[in-house]
Amino acid sequence: MEILHSGLLQRALLEVVVLGGACGALGVWLLHLREVYAAESLAHAMLPGLVLASLAGVPLLLGATGGVLAVAALIALAARDSRLGSEIAVGVVVTATFGLGAVLALAPDVPVGLDKLLFGDLLGAATADLLAAGALAVIVAVALLAGHRAMTLTVFDPVSAPSLGARPARVRLAVLALLAVAVVAAVLSLGNLLVFALLVAPAAAAMRIGRSVRAQVLLAAALGASAGVLGLVISAELDVAAGGAVALAAIALYLAAGLAGSSRSTARRRSIVEALGAER
Amino acid sequence: MTTVIETADLAAAYASGPPALSGVTFAADEGQAVAVLGPNGGGKTTLFRALLGEIAVVRGTITIGDATAYVPQTERSRLDFPVSALDVALMGAYARTRWYRRVTAADRASARAALERVGLADQARTRFGELSGGQRQRVLIARALVQDARVLLLDEPFGGVDHASEQAIMDTLDDLRADGRVLLIATHDVEQARRWDRVLCVRGEQIAYGAPADTLTNAVLEATYGPEIVMLDCGHRAVAIQHHHH
Image 1: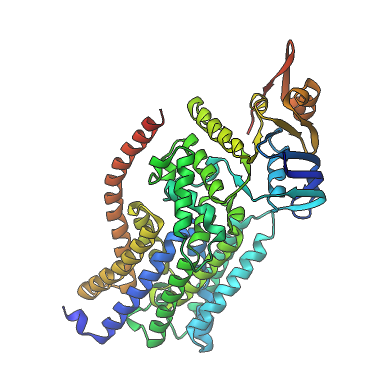
Image 2: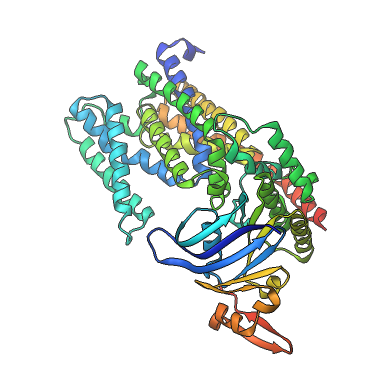
């Protein structure tokens, strides 16, 4: 295939495999912790940060970081208003910042186009992007290994978690911080709208198949990387947008896993009946 | 008999709020089971959290001589989370496992032994969410054993389990008492409370503490449940009929 001979595509492949693997693995815990809404919000709400960085001529990575920090602070502030509640607060902040970002990005003197910010620029992956992706993968791997037991307690039994050695509030905060790092590292390549697909779809697929959390995390990493490769190849062969193709490939893998998972769950239902029978 | 757990005029509060429970004075010896009886929101969970050191003691004292474990209601855990019965029992070893180490072989052996003790050795590999309510409760008791707890705080251990499972849990609890462990059993069921060595009645404050026969009088039950209870006087003892509302 000619795709492997193009330097541009080789870099893009490496970038998307690393990002897909890291986002997929992290996604499993985001889904178990039910922080999907936070994932989507963070990704979308950093748009003004990106646009402002582009206007000011500073590295977009810096803008993404500033954008995430500003959004986190705004959400924390808005959630203090007890009349709102945290979900509505997030909704208000995200819509406001995304709208602001769109208005700013449509100004004529913004060097980077809105489409690149929203849908990413995989084929434009520079060395700095590759390094950011590699660093993210290492951070995610270390954090998920080190935090495995604390996250397990936080998800499975938050009421007893403190007496078993974990602090659920801190664990959640740490996972959200990790999410922010992931979104910042991935947003330039995958785009503001599409980074969410790689955080959620491979994880959701893996959770339908994997019988243990470890299996789910490894499977989600593999599916995330596969979705990246599949999407890139399709985009090169059919000459369609790379980010969109990757997102659609991730969703296709999720649907395939749904079919595989439903045939497994019939087998599982039988074992529940056996378990009930064993009790008598 | 050695006193294992003792409180004197205990009052506990959440954050900076007023005390959610006050005036609690009781003591339990080795091998004793104490029913903690009270309406929903009466302070049973508050007492447990104070004994675990999770909320502030604003007055009085707690003296506990041994490791204490909390055994939650099984519906409080996430049943769709992919962990086996053995995984759950092993969680009892997490607090003593450094984050960069694996759970030790000794702890694995102790988790298997604990499952065997509650009669679930053959279910070790079964997913927690696929067990029956009574079996799940026993797995959570096994987890407390892995924590090496001598004091077990059980939150409504008979909630939503059928008669056969109730008997299996009772057998497990009797086995633990014979071993000298102290059990505190939160319940809102008066009949359940009569089975244990002592009863502690709470409703925002301590109403009474003592042996069931002395404690569960009409006056104490009315003070504990207030208008939530209907008293039927059946000769020598009161029968309480409660309205359940959640």
